[in-house]
Image (cartoon, rainbow, N blue to C red; front, side, top):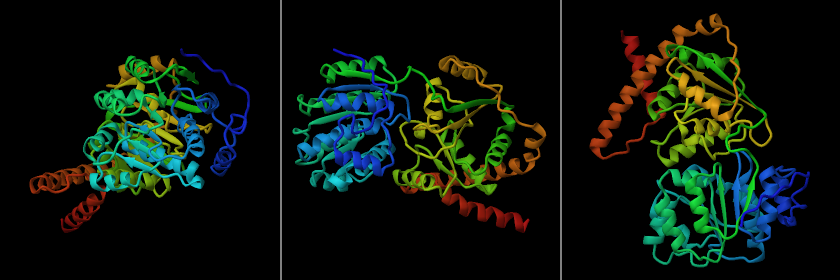
Length: 439
């Protein structure tokens, strides 16, 4: 039977029943007080109950399941103790980092098992029998089927994080198969941004008398997020983007584009104008995706240009401004995109570009969040003085993209790597400059 838990009082991690070792780890991470979802979920989980957690993005839910698991592991040390299923590779690495940060002093060993990496080296990692496995469903099932000696018959904890997205990405079959080969006697935590019919079905199939903890309305953006829209003709999007980046220089930005191609060409355009931008999209190899995130997290690059591959789950603490350069087709994606800023109590700004073709999509977003957003004020004369330079930078970027795509086609014929790469484009740019000089 489900129940709702209410826990509003200002409490410490110690008050929630968290052990001294883990309280010290939280203090070392500068977590002074638990977030709402942590206040709600941790005491219930420490009582040994299954948990269904519904929480807005940026709410601190990773620690809400990591702390109870690590506390149980302290009491009963065991290999292959917990499995965390996630929808994306980046989220898997991020969860692993949080487990290592919290459990480092305990000697906790974690392993990340995701696609896009070598199966053999992963099999060797599994042979070392880590305590915590963080995996995407498809690759984990590959190992359960094909890696000799690997099984999860002694598993004590299962977490399904971003469960709605796991199911939306058509991992239902894989999840069902995994549930069949792990023990029924276990603790299960299911965390989701939304309670869809698929998630309800999964809850009924895999949890026993769960306690439901919910800390937000179904579709809600955090209070400290300042949201605006900019209504502009589609042909001036580039120049307005550059104006905003210059006007707010010194902040860190995430700029969301609708396609991999647009992500790459926009990143190249910004680099042509001397702005430190790095792209992130689904056609990049896993190593390049991780490298892009590392550069942005380390503040070596202040602008991350991304598709929706980075809109959910990723914890990049210092994002000051989110710009929806291309409006999201699905209104719910707006919530996840703007949730990259104003995280963990900090403030943030989100600006959405609305062109003459986007009015209906924008109205859907306002209806979903139940808010009329204010217009972001700009002086047209200040913006348009950059138009000529920006147009030239976009032209060069488009030529660089054409050259990259030709190289990509040749690689495919030769059986080589077919990844887009901005580093390749730097060479392209040098060649183009050389040609222009000769002219």
